[in-house]
Image 1 (cartoon, rainbow, N blue to C red):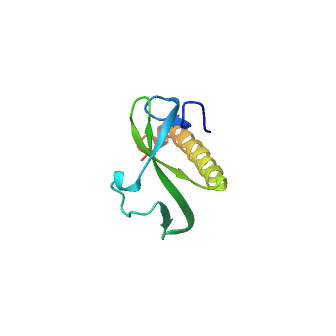
Image 2 (cartoon, rainbow, N blue to C red):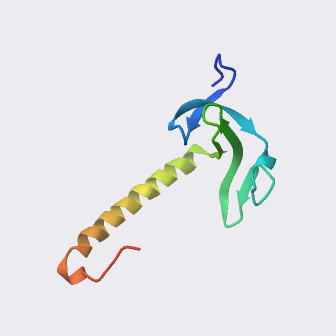
Image 3 (cartoon, rainbow, N blue to C red):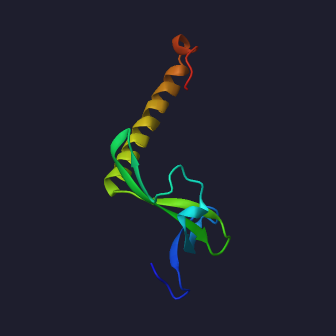
Length: 104
């Protein structure tokens, strides 16, 4: 989103607010590969484009990534399933016969 302040607004993880950011060149970060396009050999369906960002308010730098929405949906689904597994394990760990079990 371009705005009258002359930049793109994005969520700054340091400010915890939407702020004007500027793009940073890949050479700013010590990545395992110098490319912005990333492919994971162990997961052939995961491809993404990473970007360096800097908040123009607090000057915090971070890396963001463009990923397909389907991957975000899958992540949310898996997190929800993991949350449910943890709740179930915690409930069982409070029962006397499962007292010695612990969550990893």
